[in-house]
Each structure stands twice: as structure tokens, then as C-alpha cells.
Image (cartoon, rainbow, N blue to C red; front, top):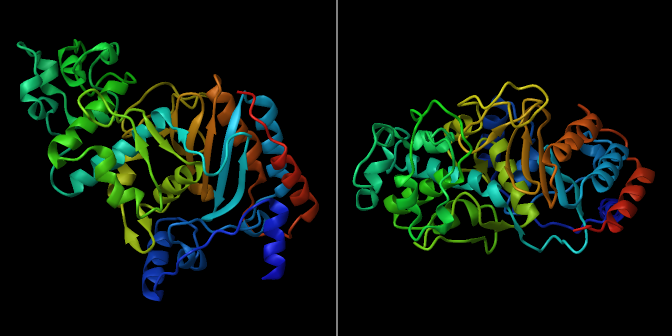
Length: 386
């Protein structure tokens, strides 16, 4: 135990407390995750409460020297990183903050908020209050334009989720007095479900629909179902003039909260012995539902799910403006949470693929204490440029 605490000090980490699961719950959860290809072991599951267990990189098959290369590349190549947490096999093996950012400081998520709105939709569907094929207009009878096009009538909840609402351009809804009415009055030239067009107002409509059928904002709805079970404290979500959680952006969380969300999705919705989010929903949400390009080297052209992007390396992610990321790589049992303020988000992702992934190995390795000391020094000296 003494050596373990010394190792935490070397890495610059604080001890994170955990709560235990009952043996049967841990056993059942382990079997479920193993069957689904997730590598989190019994010990990790037994430790998993509302906090994240920590470990040396090498004990989880990760090279600390490789993490040093990743941090150096991100620090010099991204203007500017704010924070990063890396989870391997359910353990924190790297966390770094660029001053003045800190572990206790919530960060704006921008469009990474969309993935949380998607989660709320999945939970409402599980409760039988909503269907993917429900027409959008049925929830807003008092807000419809006098004349409704056939394409507007055909727009479904599914089309909002997949960014195929049928619009050619986003409605400039933030200047409107009533956001839902502005969305519904906007031209729909394409048949819904056939034309990918990134559409933040469509996510707002999902939030508004959740509020219509539950009587709660998305933030209020998710607190007991997602945020509290994960130990996410004091989440904040900005609202529209109609007092609706914006949905498409406006959520503020800590970096560790983003990491927990990614780990929950990696574990097919299982957390602390409970199924917080339906596994079937997670499968649908993180799979390619529609095409959004020709693939290639762009991580914005690999396909789109239900408010989640497909990535290269068989990964998926939620992301937000200026470099906010929740990246999940199931084949590597890896979660990467990043906050930043950068204009080049592809470059930021490239460092994950080119620098971080090569540091991963199949089996535990001998601790590299020299590299661990180097990593500690690197992390302590990080400063954000903006």
C-alpha cells in the first residue's frame, strides 16, 4: 500500500475513494461486460462507485514514455489544450490540466452536450413515453406554422437525432423570440432522413420534446437517472427563452465527468451494478446510422449515429466546438476526455491516434519510474495559452 501511494505521488495524482459493490452484482456485471467485449475486470467493477479508480499506466498496459510523447505533442501542437483524462480498463492512467484549468473547474462542453441530450431521449424511449418514429409536429400543435409542408409533417424524432431533419441551412433561431416556432417555420427542402446537415437547433427540439413528455428539462430529467449515479455534482445547462435546456450546447461539466460518461458508454450503460442506460440504445446511438462523407482521413466523414460521431480506429465520440471530446475506443478499452480552446479539432484528434494509441499494449508492463517522474514534471508545468 505504501508503494502504491508513493506511485500516486510520483504521477501527481490524489487518492480517489471508491465504494464497493456486493459480490453478486460485481460478478453479474463482469459477465455481461466480458460477453460484450469490454475488458474491465472484476476488481475494477468492485471498486466502481461514483469515482474513478486510478492506476499506474504500465499496470494497465500503457507506456508512460508514450504518454509523455502524447502530452508533449498536444502541448506544443494544440493551441490550446485545457485538460485530458485517459482511462484504460476503467482506470485513470493519466490526468493533466493546463493552468489555470483544474480538476474542480467545470468547462463548457459546447456540442458535446448533444450526446447527453441523446442519452435523455434514449431513457424517455425506454420509459415508453416516446418513439423514434414519432412525428415532430405532434409535440408542438400550438407552435406550428399556418401551412405545413409535407417534409415538415414527415420529420421524425429519428431524423432529429441523426441530423437529417431535411434542412439545407440551420435556422437562425437564437435571434427568434420563440425557438421552437422558428425551427418549425424554417423551410424543409429535403425529405427527412435523406440529407445529412449538422443541425444544433434539431437537438434543441429533442430537448424540448423530452420536456414536453416528462414535464422536466433535460437537466432535471437526467439528474437522478444519470448525473447523480455517476457522481456528477452541480451540472449546469443553459436554457432558451422558453426555459428549455438548450440541448445542443450549454452544458458545463468537469473533465472527470466527461470521462465517467465515456466509461458508462464503454460499459454498455452499466455502472455500479445497475443498467443506467439501455445497452440497445447505446448500440444504436454509437453506430453508424447515416453517412456524412466519404471516410478517408477525416474524422468528420466516418458516419453519424444518434448525436455521436463515428471515428477512425473503430471509435466513436461526442465532441464540441473548440476541442471538447469524449472519445471511446472499444477495441482498446480506452476512454479519452479532453477540453481545449483550439481552432483545429482534427489535429487534436490526430494526436490521440498517432501518439496515444501506439502507447497501448495488450498486457501489463513493468513500471517505468523514470518516465513517471518525467510525466509528473511535464504535467506540473502545463499552462494554457488561451
